Length: 516
Image (cartoon, rainbow, N blue to C red; front, side):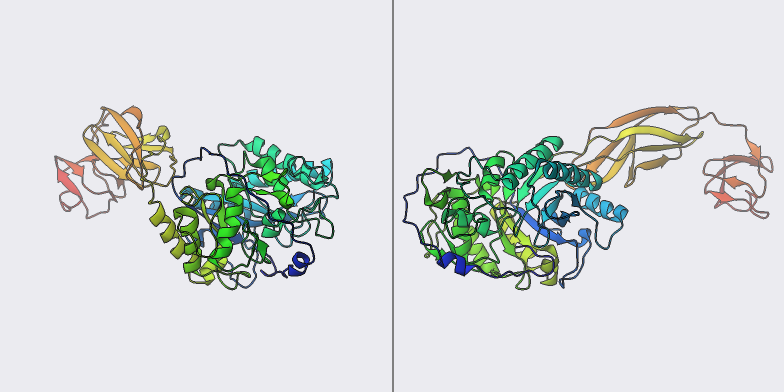
């Protein structure tokens, strides 16, 4: 559970031990899969849109080692079943919040809006609620420029009606309408530029191996209720980050209970998603495995963040087992004994607790993940500067402006080239001086990113103005470099911009004037 007022929930062991344990079934081998390539390992962190003792931080002050920041949370505005979702940045103006979202995106980060959480109960029991959800969530994403949507439905948001026993063909309205809403939102934004992620609790996913809410007697009707949503969106789901914390003991594929806070627990929970399992141990209802690049471990960032905090060493022991195939003595993975090199990475609640805990999570696990998969060299150049225009000109100078380039990492500056000359600037304007009057020039502007990649150039041609008649020097006149004046029968060139004063006649101040 990801919480707003607190980060702990009661364990539900009593529910587990009150139901009969079903017999052990054999697990079919997972079919070969063509896994999507993973260029690097992903680290996701939730950001608090509230204050709960961890300390408020600005978005831009989260550890730069996170790849994705989930803004938590957008919540219902008109009751649990209305479907309308709202979001107001905490301790921010809208303009400042949008600026921070854009800042993180300029650094190559993704910023996703998360809906729900401990206090944000969301149910979509009707078509009207579904439509309200789609319209309000779409508006939030467009208003703030979010890169995607994270579904963090908790509590009683999802449940299964009695008899709704087949996760592949659900009939419960709150399930059916949520699936429809997510696919509609995803279609609206397009799969190439939109991220859809989910952060359920173990209760709603792995518990479905033993108990399924629509088909069991005397068990909670919410058990395993995320499974039909995951299954129906698996083709558009970027990743699943089950919360491996605030959990009761869960039965793994070895039919043994596994308790949170250890490498054993994390490997067993992830293995269920990577291997697949028969829902409610019914071999006719087999939940198929997700791709490894669709799976992250969900972890607390500090002991204060939630129950089940796991030490750095234990987390990395679990990752060694999952990614490298270094098996634990206590649990052997079922899906692959050699590991999943494309396993996606880790998620944490939260970036606030990470900072509170002196960035132990982000520093330690970023180093581990980068060691597994060294960062891929950035070879993608920025986009070419657009709309290069002549802002002003004179006989000896030209001022240019252009629209900012974009890059997958960050643009660090621009170069203006003309002939064999270059001028480097960090902004989107440049003034080139010491030009020849009445002469045609071709200026080409290129952008450079942090890796040294250079964009293609955008050019503009301009002819400097003709030199005007030389005027006699006079006091109280603003002169610029290369202006010409006459004084005492001689012609002088201005060497430094200045406003003339009596006593500063050209013959008296060679620092300002040079005889031509």
